[in-house]
Structures are given as C-alpha cells and as structure tokens.
Image (cartoon, rainbow, N blue to C red; front, side):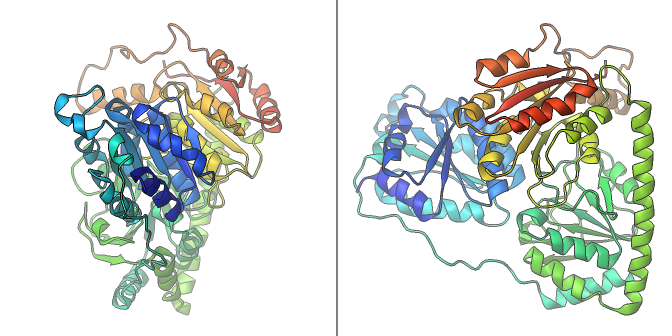
Length: 551
C-alpha cells in the first residue's frame, strides 16, 4: 500500500470526520484520495488561517479531533496565527502541510522550507514523515499527543513522494483508552477541609470545565460552597451559566485589578485553566493577601505553573468536583453556604439593576450604543442559538444580553489574536448542524478572516453573521489610553492609524460578492426584524450594524 492510503486509513481509524483545508499542489495525494473516503468531509477555505480557525472551533464544539490541511511553507505561515490561538485554546487537532519531494531537499525548491521548525513553537509536537514506513506510527502518535491533557495542535509535514511510497505498515489506532485521572482521596479530604474553613470562598473557572462536561458539577459545587464564580477575561466557553445568581462576572487583565476583584476572598479555587492571561504588568500576585489558593486540573503540568499554591489536585473534573461537593454535606456548613448564596443573589440583582440603569442612559444614543445593539440582537435571535463572539469591546454587553445556560451556547477565541470569530463560526456550525448560529464580530476583526463568508456560502451553512461597524479599532484606542496612563506617555494626541473610515468598508457588497445576502442596519428598531428574517432564511447571511465608536 502507499503512504497516502496509510495516512487516510489513519484518519478513519482515529475517527476523523472532517478535514479543514486550503488545497495546493503538494497536497495532491490527499485530495486525490478523498473520493475513496466518502465518510470524510473536506471543508474548504480560501485562506489557511480560515481553515485552522474553523478546525479549532470545531474541535471545541464537537469534542472531536479534526485534521487541517495546509499548503507548504507559505500556507503554514498563513495558518500560524490561528495555530497559536488553537494552542492557547487547547484544541486537539492534527495540522498537516504538504512538503516538496524530499529528494529536492538540497536544491531549495520553490515553496520549500523547514516546516517542522516553523510549526514547532506553536504546537505540542512537530515532525516530518521521512518515509512511508513511518506514516502509521507518526499518525498514531500525533493523535495521542494532540488529545493528551492539556490538549492542543500537533503538526505533521507530508512530503509528496513519501505519500506515494510503498509500505507494509498499515494504519492502527489504540482502542478503549481509559485515561481520566481519579483524584487522590487524601487531596479531596484536605481540600474539602480548607473549603469548609473559608468564610468567603470564590471560584475562578476556565474552559476545561466545559470541555470535560463538568459544568453541572461546577454549578452544584458552587452552590454547596456558597461561592461566587468568576470567568477569565479571555475564554473559549461559558463554563458556568452567566445568569446564575452566583456568577460574578469577567475578571480584568492585570494582576492588581484581578486582586482587587477578588479582594474579599479568603480562599480562591482555580479550576481547569492556565490562569491568567494578563495584558498589562502590575506587581504582585493576582490573589488577596493571606488567601488560600487551590487549583484543580486534569494534568499535573498545569498545577503551580504560574503561581504557588496552598494545595493542588489532579483529577477528572466531573469526578473531582462531585467528590468535593459530596464532602460538603455537613448541615452546619450547609447553613453557612446558604447564607452566602442568598447574599450573592442580592449582589447579582443589584449588579443587574446597575447595568440596566447605565444602559438606559445610553439607550437612545445615535449611532447605537453597545448595550442597545446587543439587546436588539438578542431580541432577534432564537433562544436555542449558538453564539460565536468576537465583539471584543462589546463583549461585556453581549454577556449581559444573552443567556448562556447550557453547554454549547457560546464560543469565543483564546490567545488574543483577532479574526477568529468568522472563521470559528464555520467550525462551530459544522459541529452544531441542527442549531441556529449567530456570529458577532467587530469590523476590524472581520477583515482578518472575511473569506470565511465564501466557505459558509460554498457549504450552505445556516449562519447569521453580524458585523458591528464602528469604523475603528476601538480596543486599540482603549489600550492606547491605558498605555499612556501607565507609562506617563503623551495623552493629548489622537489615535494613530486606528480608524477604518477612509475608505469605508462595505460589508454588504463584500458579502454579496461571496454569495451571501447582505443588509445594512442603522436604526435600533430595525435590528431585531432583520435578525429574525435572516434566521428564517436558508443559507448564510450578513447584517452590518452601525454602532457608536470611541473617537
């Protein structure tokens, strides 16, 4: 058999259902093999970054491991930004790129380069298949490493001649791998005791809770503890219901501000993430002085990686959180937790009222304020919709407007690189074919991956793309203000090269040019009807909504 058959058989053996890619000449062996493997769907993109971003969100939304197919050195370079996002998101995926015939290695062929070295900094493992006899073993190891906690992308370079070499080594995959670690009973006992001693415990939650299916277990534990639950500033999932009375909100992006948000806590329980992705340096730890810091992860690599801990525990998250909850069954402790839950419910109601009051003051502004536009978008979106969000400066208002009550309601990007929203919507929709999908993106972010609209039309995906048009990089203006303040820099100058109004971006025309219906909306009363009409129509569509800027 040939190397390409072993490669394709490896995909089948490891349960791959979809390849996300942008085809090229060195990928001819893979592309030519697709007709013999009808069980694998190829999702085509017009840019390698779109393929990687879509695959990353697909992995997050489906729990399955996709393959990404890129094109030699320039194609891999085009995809590296999104591979970085997938690494930060812990998306299990196997990224491949066709490589030139390795007999040309010393002749510097066109498009040739050291692909392994290029991919190594943004993947868990990077390797080139040097001969067909290695294909089965390398693919088996690639899927293993991609899925080991913490999960992430691996890279495999595929020289075109190796794909055509003969080998007797057939594809193989391991079966029935029971890898979920059980928590140490001594750790459960010790951490339970520390939680019961705390007067004001809080929880900070990250994406692994959602990926592991531990969301309901987290809700039960938070209620049993009487603990408020904070979200990371940059997150891929809504790992806790955002309208639950114990939900406290989104943490800031520097240690001092995080410490201030957690100021009343005497115990901080970190669950399922690297903690923290900061933007600005401030001295000191992100935890209040004297607070116990406990971390629970599914991989020992994460424990105490960034911060010293009072206690750390490795364990399958649903099992571990359930065991902690069961350990808090003491009646006297239950009364204290109930009192804290009641106080949190009061705080939640007060926070909602304060937000609504602020929103009303901006309600009738023109162009539309962010609270108003998010409320109108929510009013036009079906209750069972999946929301893919890259609204950035409107993200806090989106979190107030939508109810993310169950797993799969919400996806966003990790790592801070923009352009993930439109690309990610492709993968999320492929993973959730039976649910309506809303993709919300800022106009600057949308231009990083605008070709995703064509993929949505090509594959006839029912996605409603909403572009928030303020004709600026608003987040950069906010960050410029912060920079000037923190570093005592000039504060009376304008914002250089941060406006997108000359010429103005015409998203409706761009959408129509890629096969989508497009509409522009500038009045708040027109937003919800436009959304409802778009969701009622088959195929993808785009709505460009004019909103206020910073200016």
